[in-house]
Every structure is written in structure tokens, then in C-alpha cells.
Image 1: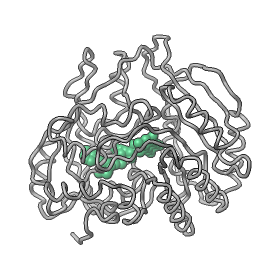
Image 2: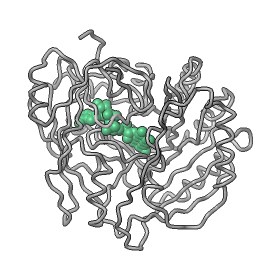
Image 3: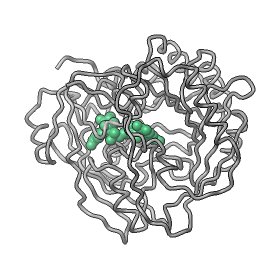
Image 4: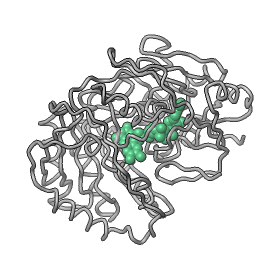
Length: 440
Ligand SMILES: Cc1cc2nc3c(=O)[nH]c(=O)nc-3n(C[C@H](O)[C@H](O)[C@H](O)COP(=O)(O)OP(=O)(O)OC[C@H]3O[C@@H](n4cnc5c(N)ncnc54)[C@H](O)[C@@H]3O)c2cc1C
């Protein structure tokens, strides 16, 4: 069957196995010694990190072993979706301490990409809240890993993009909250400098994110709206169930061009471009506004799209971001609003993405002449000591990866010990030179 990630690029013909439980999964790994495989959670990574000729789905590892409200701990299968944890947690005054821009990702995918939310500058990555997980190795052995037990494997697996084995289940520390209403404050920034100044000045705010008009140019380059958020105090502990709309088919490619996108961004700024004092908004509007439109990735047409997310360290921030936005602008690419966030300190995991600085995510429609632009952006990011997010990547080359993820050799050394045949591999790991390309 044809399988792709959220960006619909690239597409592979793959065999998909969906074992119905942990035992079936273990049997599959033991019996299919000659296959190299990669695990797939909810398929929300954009590129090819969960693509290979043989893919094993974790979606049936979806049961809850324990939900301890007193200690705010959930123990569940790796296929459980974050949104389903929220449904149990919220009525008990608990919340996930790190939420990405969609709540439809799986626990396994959240650990494997060591995801970040709009509060990285305060709380760090998802792995900060992973008490332990059970990992099925290539040998068939199941190992429990935590910050204090099998620490090396813990640090390689969090952010390790499924290359150390299959995460079967995890114990996660939740956060106590008195309300899931988010008091949101909007601040308009007329350009990039003022956007970064606002983010820096509000570094104490629990959540922050800026929506940047990446098509604005010259003096308006980087104009944006910064959304700050804090949990409210109105005792609202209600799960929000919204009926989602759907984009039924891939829209014709010509509908998405620089004129339609410019018009969209301009009207967004015309409507939202004013400072608004703190006002209550629903948590899913704040954290995952796009979840209301199922399959919004179809807007980019049948050929798909690429998301380019990078981080540059604080010192290089302004110059690096300006260079990238200028390049995107003069190429007439870029699309809907881009997302800019502040990152706090890096953690000790070997391949986790965040370093202290600023991260920007831009969407590009896939078209032949896009790749040269992205190669230019890679060079700017590298020159500014930054790096590209593996969960969004579909095309970075091995040299760029190795120059920007300094712990890649330590990762490969550990992988050789636990998976000498490189049974766990993806199109991405082959491309990045973490695993060598072979035919199965
Ligand atoms: C709209 C949208 C917004 C997003 N916003 C953010 C954001 O704000 N912050 C952020 O950090 N990310 C964000 N992401 C990216 C997303 O959080 C990650 O790509 C995440 O890994 C997806 O999880 P998944 O379950 O869909 O995993 P998949 O896409 O299926 O797989 C991703 C990786 O995890 C591995 N994996 C999955 N399950 C397991 C398992 N059980 N054991 C071992 N490895 C496994 C796969 O092999 C692959 O390498 C966003 C994605 C979308 C579509």
C-alpha cells in the first residue's frame, strides 16, 4: 500500500503490519528477523521518519494500565493519542504538561520526537515528564528505561525517531491545573525585532507563540501576532469536544499560490492585528487551532507539502531569522502564517531538537523548484549554529544533519550495540546516514 506522513511527501509503497497487542508485536519482531522496520504512531510527522518498506503500527497499543489522579500519573500504551489522555485527565484537574500543535499524536510518537509545546522556555520537552517507558529491542528483549534506569537508552530513545526499538508503553507525569481555560493575550508586532522583543519580555509567561506573516516584506518583514497564554482560574475542567470539518479532497494545486496566500495572510492581520487584553479562550483553540479541520494537509494539493522547522540559538536569532525570512520572501515562496516560538535550554538527549533560541516553522507547497531554496535555508541555519527538526524533515542531507546534531556519533555507537543489524531504520535514517541503505 501507499503510505506517507502528514506532509504527503514523500510517498512509499510499504507493507504495513498492525499487531493487535504487545505479544503479537513481539512475535512479529522475533519471527521477521530479515526485515528492517520502523514503527509508526499516528502518522503526524511530516516527512519520512515513519516510512520504510516495512512499517509496524503501534495504534493497537492503546490501553490504559493505570490512571492515578492523586499522583497525577498515567500509564498507557504507546499507541494512545494525547487527546484521549486529555479526555481522562481534564475532569480530574490534570493536564498534559507538553502539548504540540495537534493533540492527535501518539504517546510513542511524542517520545520518539521528544516533542515541544508553546511552553518549552518554561517546561522543556515531553521527555521531562516521562517517568519511564518499556522498549522492545531488535533482540526481542523488553527493557524499562527512565532518567535513572538504562539512562543511555532513555536519552537515545527520547528524540531517537523510532531507531532504538518500539516503545510499548509509558508512564507520564501530568500537571495539576485548576482550569483548562487559557487566558490569552494578543500583542501585535510590526516587524521581526519587535516580535522577538515581545517574546523575550514575556519569557515568564507560561505559554507563548507568534504567528508570523512570512509573506510580509521590507519594513514589515516578520510582522506577527504574539499569543501569550496562562491557565485561567475559573475552575473550568470540561473536555471540549468539537465537531471537526474536513477537506474532502486534495485541492487543485493552482488554488494555493502566492496571491491567494498573501490575501489570506493580509486578511488575517486585518481581522486579528490588534492588541487584545487577556481574554478566556478554550484550550484547544489555543494549543491546536488546526485540529478543527481534519485533513487540512489536503489544502496543499496532491503532491503534498514540506514543513521546514529550524531553531537558531538566541545570539544568532535576529540575524538568522531575518536572513531566512528575506530568502523566503524574495523567492516568493512561503505560505500561510508561520509559527515562531522561544525555546529554553537543550536537554541531554542525543537527538532532541530544541536548543536555547528561537524556532520557526514554515510550510511550502511541494514543487520542483522548491528544493534549491530549502538548500539555501539549510546553509543559513547551519551558519547560524542552528538545526532542522527531524519530525518535520523529508529532505535534509546527511552532512547537514551531522554538522548540526553533535551527538549523532554517540547515538550511532549506542545503536550499533543494541541493533547491530540496523533492523530499525526509516527512509530518513538512511538518508541522514544514521543507518546505511540496503535492499531488504
Ligand atoms: C498540525 C501539527 C502540529 C504539530 N505541532 C508540533 C509542535 O508544536 N511541536 C512538536 O514537537 N511537534 C509538532 N508536530 C509534530 C508531531 O508532534 C511529531 O511528528 C510526532 O512525532 C508525531 O507523532 P505520531 O504519533 O504521529 O508519530 P509518527 O508520525 O507516526 O512517527 C514519528 C516518529 O516517531 C516514531 N514512533 C512512533 N511511535 C513509536 C513507538 N511506539 N515506538 C518507537 N518509535 C515510534 C516513528 O518511528 C517516527 O520516527 C506537529 C504535527 C502536526 C501534524
